[in-house]
Image (cartoon, rainbow, N blue to C red; front, side, top):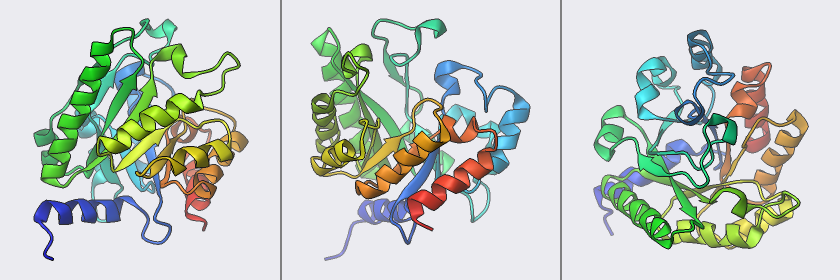
Length: 272
């Protein structure tokens, strides 16, 4: 049976997004400025220019489309990482000392037309559940459905990052509520996500349990900057649990030696 063009396009983009041998990816999330403003690793223009060289070896980079003109050389040439567009802005995970809100909100910050014009490989959207107002969750579902329809139409990769609103996602001891993670992860899969970016659910065994209930491959989020050993264990768990790789940001670009940190994660995830 002859495949239709958009199906071929999506398969080709996925083949470039994943390492050809390991079938996993190391994506750098370089998208925190639109939420947190100037932070270490992207605080000054000098740091931004330095990261153009630092992040070059990544398999993919997640970033807002409005930031693209300032890091354009990062994506130039045949050996450049794949570009994944951050489709949404959200203030839900903004900390209290950065004008945090009780629940926050989410809005698109780009369009499929702009994503296609940029040469990006795909997009990432958020899917938040657990609002006090159930209509807000319903709007999240519709927004993700509409973006997924466009990604299907144009053969783009669609990554969904599902989350629970604020403190509702953790137990009193700070561990993740795995049963809620299973709910929003399965929701993301059945909304059509090609990949699902998830927080690390505390142990390799729980991560495997989460991957086992998801028809779509998971990508493990690095979260805030943590000790190198802990970050390495998360990357190793992504391999043993059978996920599609990692999405690390601050554990790479805020490291004392970002290029070396990225190389270390590439070695772990691709088992070099």
